[in-house]
Structures are given as C-alpha cells and as structure tokens.
Length: 114
Image 1 (cartoon, rainbow, N blue to C red):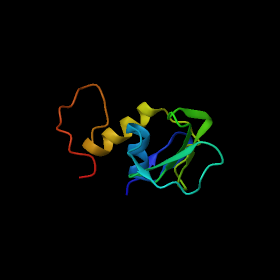
Image 2 (cartoon, rainbow, N blue to C red):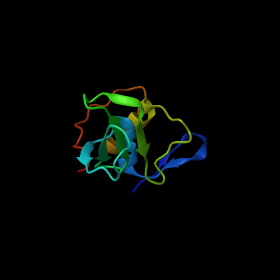
Image 3 (cartoon, rainbow, N blue to C red):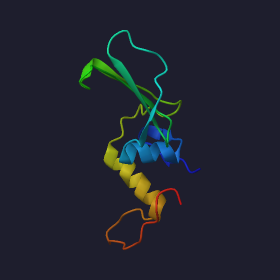
Image 4 (cartoon, rainbow, N blue to C red):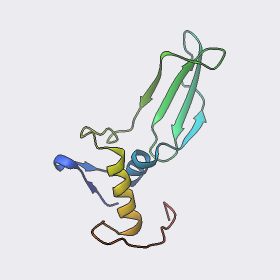
C-alpha cells in the first residue's frame, strides 16, 4: 500500500480511503444494530472503507431532523480538510502514474482495483 502525502505533512493511509474521498462511498444496506426510539433506522456500510451511515426516517421515508450520522473507521477522518479534487488527483496518479505538468498525457485508465 502506497501512502498519499497530505498537506501539512499528514498522510492518507489507505487506497480505499482515497477512493471513497475521491468518488464517494459505495453503500450497501445492512441490518440496523439497534432500534430507534422513534421512526425507522436504515443502515448502510461502504464496501470499500467500512464507514457506516445510519439514517433515521419517518414512515414516509423522509429523513428526520438530525437523523443522519456516520461512524468512520480509524484513520479515515481527514483533519487536514483536503478538497475532493485533491483526492481525485491522488487517485488519478495511482491509476496512471501521471502527475500532471505542461503536456497532456493520453493514457488508458485501468479499472480501479485491478
């Protein structure tokens, strides 16, 4: 696993974390760990990084006020507040080896994860 350099000297520890930060999470539904006192719980887990999202909704499927929260795995949180475009650049670098520059490189991107 290659570490991505972060601004301010930090690092992003996992390729999966970089993919989720660049592309968004890949959610699948899981059974809720606990029943809410009001409404219905819907839980989702990211297949790449393991983040869990819990939504509390009413019987019409509307999100209740304050009804969404996340549990991230250790090392996922980004204290540096790096923008999504920077994570996309890091992912592009990992996929192609291209680091940018004056000229434009034409490369065929391999599928993520191959």
